[in-house]
Image (cartoon, rainbow, N blue to C red; front, top):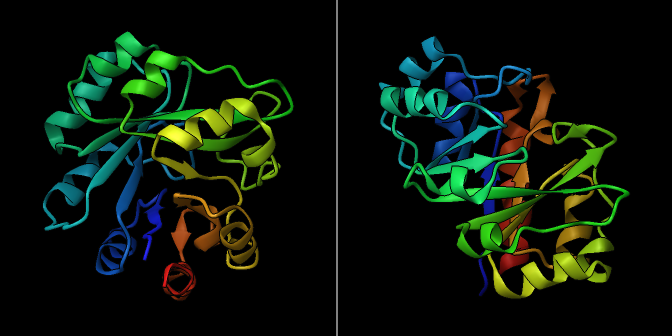
Length: 213
């Protein structure tokens, strides 16, 4: 039985984080870029730091100063750093923490920094619409997972997560047709921006794990 990696992202409410931690998932994502409506500020992070969380925590950053990332890590250590912008390999490796690097999938040809991909713990494919990188709640053209050579090269050699517009209505199609190694979902599990629907969270996990078996 192959196990699909599941990451729930955009968790900024304590009860949502605790509930997600109780489910059969693999990664919990906290967003530390203030542009996001799911932004975790320092006060909330201190609350999170006091919790006994069992799942690995992923901190999501986007073109932010090294000092800021280190400040966050000093409040609560993170198991992975996810870099969602145009960060260089030198920047990503400077923290000596496993990292996930986002590849933005839009209408343009995808250009990949091989040194980043080779050294990342995982790669994340997310939707880009014009200048908006991620957080769109919109899926990219999943056929690119098969037809885009740059993505195929990563899929064949690396761990990866598919993000962007995943929800209960379309996840089965993604699983059956494209068999992704991993999934990253945020807004598709919400009843309001930044507020997770616990029933949807559980149903999403059940769909994925049923497909795994």
